[in-house]
Amino acid sequence: MSSMGSDNPPRIVKKIKKHGGHHGGAWKVAYADFVTAMMALFIVLWVLSQSAKVQKLVANYFKNPIGFSNKGRDILVGSEPQILESQPNNIQTERAREMEILQKMGEKILGELSSNPEFSNLAGQIKIEFVKEGLKIEIVDSSKDLFFEIGTAKLTKPAFLLLQKIGDELSKLPNKIIIEGHTDSRPYSSGPNGYTNFELSADRSNAARRALTSNLMPDSQIDQVRGYADRRLRDKADPFNFVNRRISIIVKYMEESK
Image 1: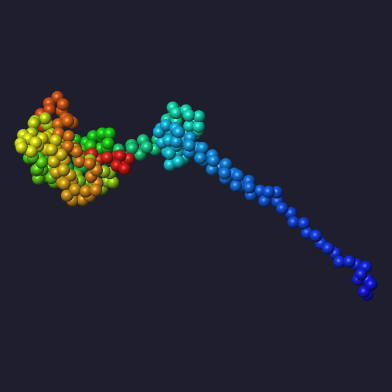
Image 2 (image 1 turned 180 degrees about the horizontal axis):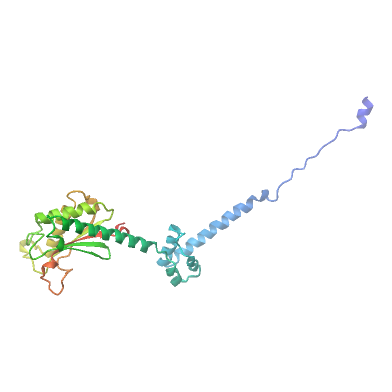
């Protein structure tokens, strides 16, 4: 038995461990990430070197890529006129929608004031129009009904209640408010303290602000209070016309309110 075991030596099995080429291709993934990062860097550097219009358009694309025209690809070759054509109409659409809302709000205010016996005689002195900053509601003096006691910033009682009513309606909107005071060109008797129409118009603006915020409108909704004296005449042909004495309430567009 022992002689047979010596004729059959033990088998030796040698296992060869195979390695994937260069760690199984992991380097390719790392290299791809590096190339992507470099591309992103070059794009950022390119955008920073462009005009403000191009930068704004690129920003608009990332805000709303679906609404961005395919013509936006022209930014890669620097064709700025085509870039302007590719700008999305979202801003214009939103502005048109907001103007419609503000218009309806202004008409509602006029309708409610006209139907209210307390304000019906004053409704004709309220003018509504759109200006660059938003919807302007102007309360204009008349030869019969004055909103301020002559030469002072003291509101008459009907004027205070009217402004309070307008403030309650405007409080339902998220828009910021600007209040402007205007006088006619009659010189103010300055007295020893140098009080002029500028001070008077600013004081009247603040009086209007206090009336607007006396009930529902928060004071934080007021963005600016301005006093223009007679520098923004409504009737330039007649600087002394009573229509030049007025309070303007501007409901700012949301984009302007930011």
